[in-house]
Length: 273
Image (cartoon, rainbow, N blue to C red):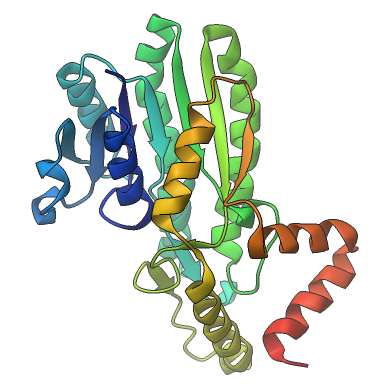
């Protein structure tokens, strides 16, 4: 039985991934910051729930070591933990900037660094990074989030060169339009006190984001697509999921337009003029 370690499993896409891999006959090491609050996943056969904070290198190394020991090794790691910060960049504190990058980017790096010795020793393994269409195109007031996802693109692409000769694959999921609470309770809002000049545009964008979330693809469906992608046995790096819908239309529009045209079109769609 193969084993996958997944981060960020308390809700949303991570939770859906745990259930789908388990249903497909995998052993799952599901990690989250607060395992004591988990009431469901630990009841599933072949699922072990671990407490792990991707911000803490000692926590990451301890959990990865425990999972390797309990599961007789790890075959795949899925870096899913992350969140979005929304608001004007000027409003972001140093702590908020550091936390966004440490969670979405450096946390992923910590987990990969912890599993690589075992992958390298066994000459096999799959590293899956849950990126975003937000690593290819950008939206207003998500500058910190986009910064992490654009960085993850470059990191993943370069990493594949290092790991392929060792029998280790890298997969980058460019997720977009997934129905989770990303634009709800998982969204960190920058206060922006004293920055009224941004307020009208900020509020209009937030309303639009939350409205569009209602037509996104269910996380369970995307989890099934991700499973097929990361178990395809190929050296393919990038996968845009889910396929079709708003995400495909957006990327086609971006490719067909100049930077200036795309920025103007996108801004007008949010501002209504």
